[in-house]
Length: 72
Image (cartoon, rainbow, N blue to C red; front, side, top):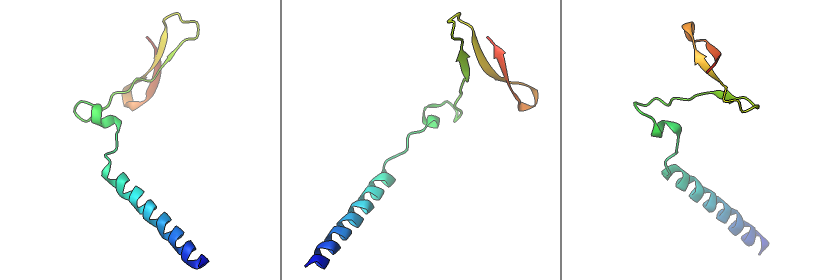
């Protein structure tokens, strides 16, 4: 009797897990590229100063593709 109950529980867990996997495969993943123009997502990396002076430091790409932080 206990083996039958154990088997039913294990098979139910397996069935539920397979159902979750099947549902996840049908749901489209949301990503940033979906909302971009021409397949390119622009990102700005900036840091506002704590004194709220309005000054913002943002990252910029310079010659050679290096990343530089500049005041704006």
